[in-house]
Length: 431
Image 1 (cartoon, rainbow, N blue to C red):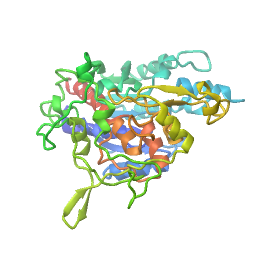
Image 2 (image 1 turned 90 degrees about the horizontal axis):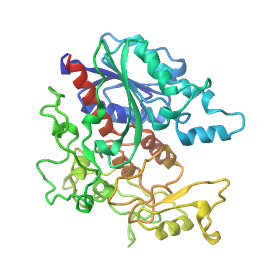
Image 3 (image 1 turned 45 degrees about the vertical axis):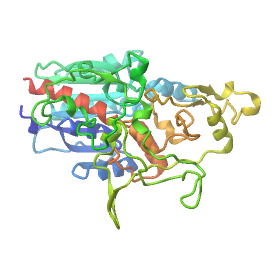
Image 4 (image 1 turned 90 degrees about the vertical axis):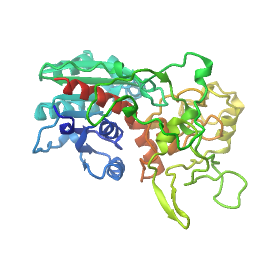
């Protein structure tokens, strides 16, 4: 199978994290679909050559394609399968996670596989799907795998941590990969490129003194001889996990109450890079960043780097927290209680600079209490959250800040998607 013939479609595409990684792995995404208009707007901004449709797949007629599809991929909505989502649904009167309509949307991906008969399929979802049960008390995962097996696919489910694939974030996800015509599904764990640091020295940020470093951290291309021709070379060695500091320390400081001019404090937002990149990850993230014309030529433009508003109580609590520490609202002293725990059960967590971030969920669009900046009294900006999801800076979110946060939290990390894409390519091209 020629590498240039590999095509894919992306169901429940969101902002396009999965498509981005698959494209890096050499797939040509022919079509994508999502029911969220704001997500489709972001997708089209960053994938102008892909036919992206706004539609509710639950009642949508799948399109016809002139040529075959090699890979059907997608991440059906996950709230009914996540541990937190199941708990919230079951706590609501008249609601049951096992009968929530979104638990059936994975069937649309199955229908697409049945219709197009691709050489492989990929389903991405939350780790909680592996422990979820349906209305009959059966394992959801076993039922799903059985459905795809009945279509003639060899299926391999795996739970992975995105940090093991170069993403500066611990994010455990369930990947269900299936291959047709007797091919063996890839062992995605063989494509891990990063690992837990073995020493304290390895936890320190790996700095590069030369912004024009000849070998910045590319995507997984750095381990593949020629990704356009050969996807058979797995990572030859594993680097320590990429940390929060390595990912975002070059981004300018912000102050939630700052102004843009004549203010000694940092601004609330900026579109300028003040420092050069100082780590390989930052070099990679800033490659091909958007530019704007100036009197002196072009300058790179930093998008989506704006501090959200925080009230004085929250900012004070942020300042009290030490690196890597967290408080449940109900654990705070009475005089520090900002909210009633019975209506706002949440955590305050300051992220550690020398560790990967904790999982960034879609909930970040409501508040940033669980993702407080390691050194500044504020939560992460959209750009910082996007960096921690492995979106490069050239990926722009042209929507409201609230929508952008939600899209980042819902996304498949592109670097993880790339690793999976390369693994699937190897499986398909080996036969």
